[in-house]
Amino acid sequence: MRQALYRKYRSSSFDEVVGQEHITDTLQRAIKSGRISHAYLFTGPRGVGKTSVARILAHAVNQFDYSGESARLDIIEIDAASNRRIDEIRDLRDKVAIAPVEGKYKVYIVDEVHMLTREAFNALLKTLEEPPAHSIFILATTEAHKLPETIISRTQRFEFKPISGPQAAKQLAAIAKSEKIDISPEALNLLAEFGGGSFRDSIGYLDQLSAGGSKISEAEVRQTLGIPSARQIKDLLQNVKAGQSDRILEGVQTLKEQGIDAAAAASALAGQLRQTLIGGQSWPAALPLLKQLIEVPAASRPYDYLEISLLEAAGPIKQPTTAKNAAAAIAPKSLTPAAAKPQTEFSLELWPQILAAAKTQAASIYSVLKLARPDLSDDKLTLLFQFPLHQKKLDQAKNKVLVADLIEELSGQKIRIDCVVDKTAFSAKKQPAPHKTEPQIKPAGSLGPISSVFGAAEVLEA
Image 1: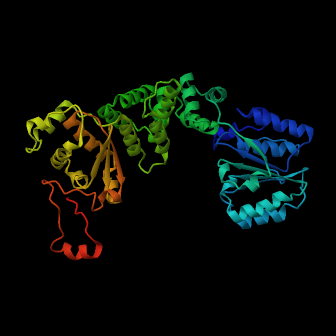
Image 2: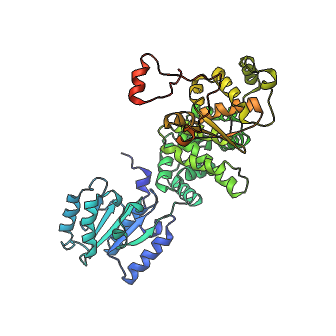
Image 3: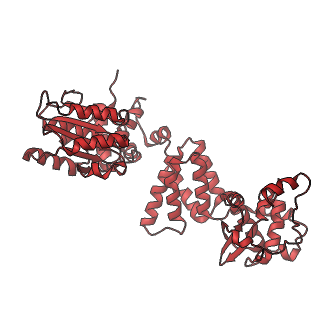
């Protein structure tokens, strides 16, 4: 069976470690001077060399040769994700007193140490407090914030950095040359960038693409790994900045049809957006959008979350001219020609007309919208609701966009909309009489008993 490239080219000496010179140099000096700690903590993102350096260190302190596949009785590796219970750590604590067999030190490498249970941490702490002179612990984790401070304080901590793009590309080129893999420089740079600082991931992608046997181009890398083109990302952000909602929807749909991963698209958008922020070419919605793009990979429906995030950053949806003409054709008869003509500024005097238009053009939200108390301040319309159920329904991005479109159509002004729950606004003293066109609904028939048990409530229309 062919050996995976990431295993074949795993570092077997400090000099072979990529991008972590600030750590390897310090460790080599410590070994040379004999200042070896009883416990080390290696933290940082995945695929940057934490476990490899731990193995190299374990062999170096014992003056063992290391080929990458060698096994030693005095070097014990423990996967905390699989051995996280207190029983495993107690077993370790009982055996740590046993003297090493081959070398000077017995070295325990505990990978993903943050996965240990609280009880297991307590048992490990006792061992770290009074370790035998012949024992060394090397703890590795991608989530150091989950470790108790009592554990961290008893270790020498080393922070591993993400591998830079140029460093990764240089090493990938050397591996490609050694393996006789024909790949363009542009494709190598893209693999290094897509690895996201994880050298192991970048090598894995190279291994995957090399299976075809043909020359690997940048286009092939994008197609195989689902990476959007730079032009697609640039156009998408320009459409967001220009408020071109229809083009945003088309762009997102194209990404989906091309099989582009939503997380990859969000990452590329975030990277480009950071560059605009650095260059001082951002706009007010840029920072909130950047925050939402980071959440895309964790969303239950990533593409829907990405699409809504971009639309929210673009502002109210601009209807095409044909759509506006169609909307005018079905405008409620109650609107007089003078009232239907867009004004230059929105005021609350138009609210009855907004409700009437919503009843005709957006029936799905009319039954909730009529329960709101509008409050206008500058260019922001706050809709107050008595119950969270109603507030949550209208607070959905698509529903707020519908209301904003109705307002812009009738007044010509773009309005920002907030939906909040404010029960005090619906007190008997503050609640106005309902509009003549909006009769109150009184419990009747089968609703009577329900009202007597749960109290009066608004009945939403279908």
